[in-house]
Image (cartoon, each protein chain N blue to C red):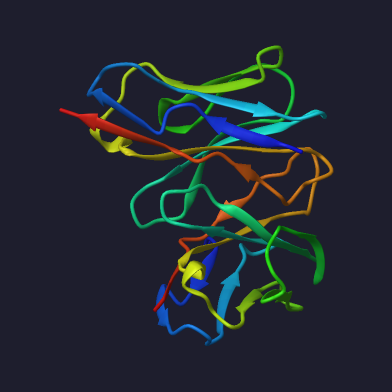
Length: 115
Length: 114
């Protein structure tokens, strides 16, 4: 079975532009979470979606938004890009949003560079 | 609020030597704890997890960790490391209510030398 897939792998944007990152979860997984990993730091939680509804949001500005589609894939959108948005964006999927058997599986990430 | 502190940013070690990567957490409720490994230019791979039960948890690639509630620690150990274990290691915490929100530490860079 395929793991979590993300596209694109890399992209370069200019300040002020917007970007859309995509994620396809493992088949059967209904929850998708997004994390931002700045170079040299641990990942920081941005959003979680479960069954197409937002279940959690981290401490990120409103320039960040996301959605989940009926097939459980997800998009992360970032508007008005800043230099500080340069990071590895990780998507993780899990069977459910919470529970004792909770476990997240991460994709390879999208490396965003803002110039 | 929950938080995770990884006490060492870099750990150099020789091949076949034992290693311990230290992780302390803070939380006012019962926690779930995880160790992830990240190889260069890759995503995160789960090494092991503590959800409940036995405090000694065994994971992949010969790693194990011990949950110590009184010391709020979850240190990762391996009795004999290989060159291929060179990577960044992250400790993470969540709880039942947080579910999808993992709180990560800053990471520990393990460098295994021949």
